[in-house]
Image (tube, rainbow, N blue to C red; front, side, top):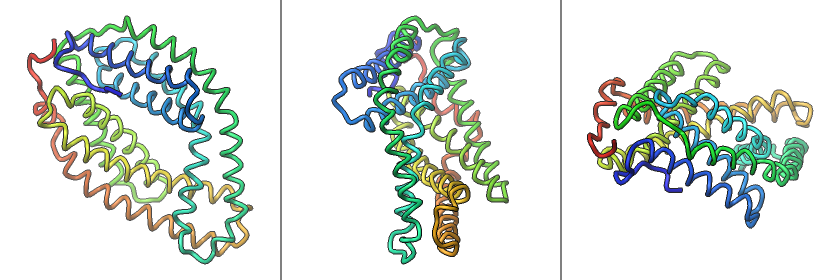
Length: 295
């Protein structure tokens, strides 16, 4: 996906429309072709929705239709979440149990989660067919999207706002001291980091000297936080699905392994985040000015 503004775009507004239309065209072509396994297509549609929400957030202060459009892509992505969540639960369980002698105690639980994923996967074909209409409607709307600002003023306020939110979310996580609060704070930081990563991707042709290294570093931070989130989801499901675990002691051991992994992931994420979000938002914004490259 050519997901970036280009110096050759006539205006920021023109680039905004172009990026959106290209992303939606790619998703529509994939769904209509039906040549990929449904699981793969669902992944790509979800990825497109997340990318579109990142794009909308970048221009949010200058885009009056933000709330309506953001809600449309949020709801579309959410309709596919069940299949993805079941698959990740099984993958996380298997990775934690690797080399552990109590793996048989979780056979029934693993089978339950696999069955959930298969049931959700069977729904994917119908869901993919149903998503064509909202994707196409968004594609039509995107051709006429309008911004109320131009040049840097159409992009930098949104860039600064998302950076500031990611920075604040990091501080909120550092201040949390109990496990439920830390899980929620970690999830919030992850969301804001992912939006910030989308913004770095969108800006990388306008400020290439600044963006290339940062895109890679933010992506790695997002991966660490994503792994932490998957571990937190598994811990929550261990509690609600305890009846499907044959050995309570094995369940306690697995929970301890999961907490240990979550803590290790968070230490790595915090170290990376310290440097990435050290600047105050005003200083960060100042380093991303691109002058007259785009009107």
